[in-house]
Image 1 (cartoon, one colour):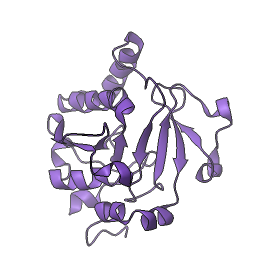
Image 2 (spheres, helix red, strand yellow; image 1 turned 90 degrees about the vertical axis):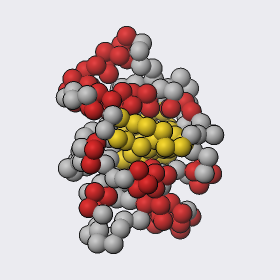
Image 3 (tube, helix red, strand yellow; image 1 turned 45 degrees about the horizontal axis):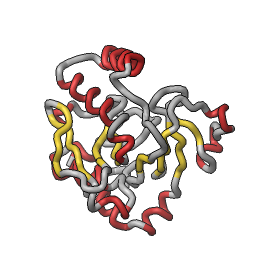
Image 4 (cartoon, one colour; image 1 turned 90 degrees about the horizontal axis):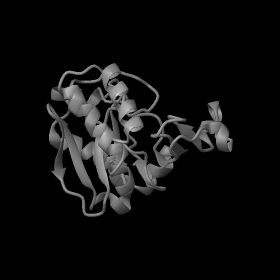
Length: 210
């Protein structure tokens, strides 16, 4: 499926991204979204799918986790699962982002609206510790887990920089309400530990990356 084959899961690497109406079919979105989840939360997690008007609930959550394909940057499609804390804060911003995109707004305008929303209190940083899982093995970078750390910077705690990020925690999106402490996970070890995730995110036949 050429749409799925075009998806690259990455916080840092940009590739051409489909428009909302060209996103994978709902079943494929569900499969890829759930590949981000830790096995202990996968079966009870809710799933959101992205359509022409923004996100829609494909199945409800019974444990507070929500899994989806996120596009914070238009050029990046990322399977992610937010816990209840992230779902009540950062995920609301992600939903707003795609709703405004569906209405035709430019990303530069939306990002400015989001910044203003944080300043005005419309959007909130996570209220306490929590976690977002990005354990999908579909594409680079390695699977990883992110812990909410609003406004934190790498220099605040000696976070890893450069090549050391493959070994030690570091801050992503530092200095913002959406900052995270990121811990990378060895991809090969994770696929052995959780083969279901590997099945969920396995690229279709003909995908040149596999």
